[in-house]
Image 1: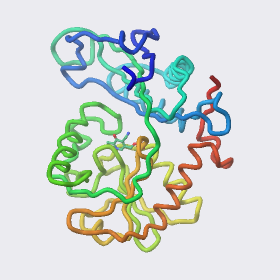
Image 2: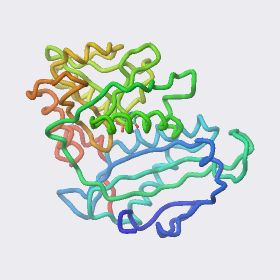
Image 3: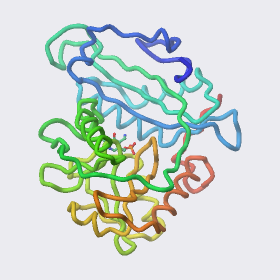
Image 4: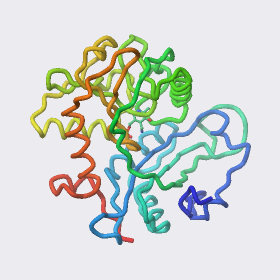
Length: 303
Ligand code: PMP
């Protein structure tokens, strides 16, 4: 099991990853009644006895709110404390990814959120930093992003990932790297696990939070960084055809941070991407704790 960090947190205890098992009858497995988080951490390049976690509080708050949609009161402070303990227990030596999950852990059938036990687990795996320098190719998915009336899209509920999975596989099997999903109104939403930005004439544009997007933490960080650099940022609905006349398009998410898009369907984007590169470089410096101005975005965990 060398692909995972040695300890998981399950049923209120830390156990070796190989022993962290759940029943085949686990309710969430059958009904998608779960919510996940995803954070990145890395040993502090300036002090290997410390771990840096990017925007820990924000990730824990989002998971706490997602849990609330499932009828589970799990305070942000509780999630944060367990994640810090999990990091200290695992003593990671390389960059890694943390996956907390809140789920209906009771056994039994019939979809519901009442009268069913819930639990919270954590595990993680090494995950190196990568910069997709050449960019990814995207197709516009034939699958539509769910709408907020179908379920709470502001929560990171596992249920929504069936559409991501269908769209990703459709994209890859038709020769693209990634998919861009449109919403019910035909407006641009996001990729399968990343938010989307475009640049037009030096301005940054991204679908607004009323466009059925996940409210990404990297997205919010990029907006704040661009604004601080004097770039005008517009959060508004985006038409599909606007992507095809963009100067730059990039995707944002915790795992990959900022990924340039090189082609959308048959439209090849310019290979010159000044704003994407500037934001990529700055975000990387921040996560590595090299930007004193943004140290408040980075929690330092002593090992
Ligand atoms: N949209 C979806 C559907 C995602 O799964 C993710 C990854 N969590 C994102 C956007 C990006 O969010 P964040 O920057 O918080 O990782």
